[in-house]
Image (tube, rainbow, N blue to C red; front, side, top):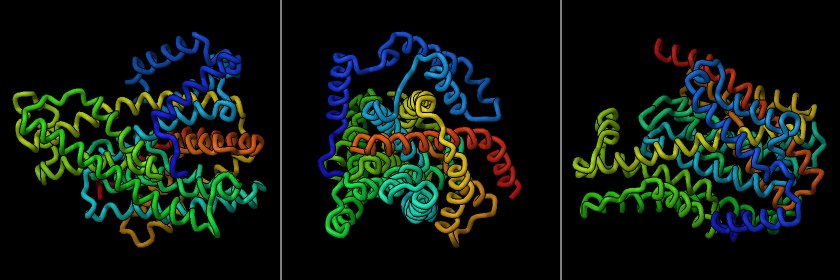
Length: 464
């Protein structure tokens, strides 16, 4: 990532100024500014809220329904939402960026195991070795099968390599006390690989002449990999520890009513993300690490108490009982997780509907069928098998991890990021149609298979 990329506040300001300028010159399609879109969005959200219990009984994820709604309100349906992923890339980038960082913080808050726990080895291996292998295999597919130039093929691999922290809630840990090995592995992988994919995005852009890789790629190795990855994790971890301990200190020592946890949540996310970008590190990794740090501070105070008692005290604590450090720490972590999960659900609805609408604009290329089959049936299982070689997992656990490499909002963000950094329009359209088609395919095939497969896995786990 470029060392002086814009901070979130500057991004918002830039997007606002650009939107105003476009509207002044009549460049924004009418459906984007039409009041009918607000009415349609309101109806969709109200309907999904009221039909939530009915949706849960269906043998598919709610994201499949959101995707269908996006197609209906798109240009081939009601024409209420017309968004071109190339023309409107800056806006799509901003919205998807916000969705990803909110979800990454949630993922970090859910993972309560300390770093020394052996369970961390699996997600780290998936987010590093399996990530590299996935990018490499997709690059080969892009060059040999799709006829893309090397830089574009590497970029496609980087866009499609990360698994999604937004859409994978059905296969991730359901709460901070969920210690299931498969769910923990998938959650940790999604939290890490949305950041570890960034070096390959920059590599692809560099090979296309859109990013400085340095002499023989030295700058890419030193800055985009060796600096940006560990520093991003360090910035987020440090800020998470400082903020969490400060809140506990104020509430415990000075009886300060540090309320408005929503503001604390947004502030910590913005600080970790913005400061990481300021020093040329990866903000996605910083946000994930910040969530992890808050949870580690909570665990440091609550120790090895029975998990149900810890969370019960966190959920039932009142102003009168918030006196012990362990109760304050558990309360803060629990409150932040609840708030962030609500924001994550809103982001999921908005982004999946947006994806469905954009797909009706660019269409589905014929190549998406065989590329999708390769990605989900060969590339993902092979990368997982190699990355977890020697891991003590059952056949059922390997199957679940190898299948549920869900692609989603992270891929939409990386696509938009690449487009806004100067992709040639024809190449941008090609990558956009293929990426959105594969994201939609992942939403459908994984959404339909998640309930029966996870039910089967849980039954085997109980029997085992």
